[in-house]
Image (cartoon, rainbow, N blue to C red; front, side, top):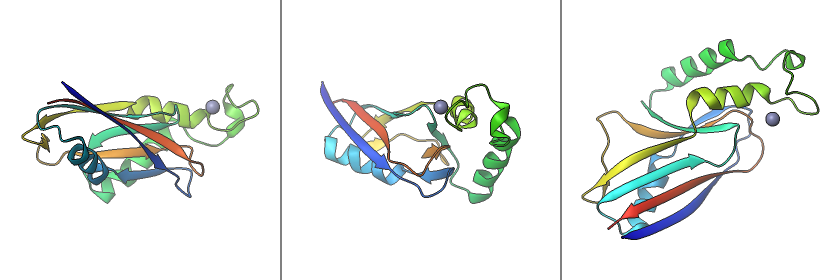
Length: 138
Ligand code: ZN
């Protein structure tokens, strides 16, 4: 069995963002030389997510509004976590949108459903964050 590991870095200028990282994951897969196996992609921060869904901008705005209704950023004072920080909402948004995805690798490609793409969800941006890519197989 072969194994590949890489960290990707993201620094978005806004508090929240939704970024299609499928091309970077495909690049990792090509570098790994693995043609049959599994790829794990996870956010290495508790205020960011990696998730799979449609690459459609309206949907991403819908997610953003839905997450703001579930866990609004303001008022910051409404969260017990926000003692010396202001990102309690980001922890909750991350919990809902998830930590990681696992995708099958078949014939050297990500074995997606038709509209599936991999996204990085940022909920407390404006600083450098990491995403782990681990690929195992042969
Ligand atoms: Zn926090």
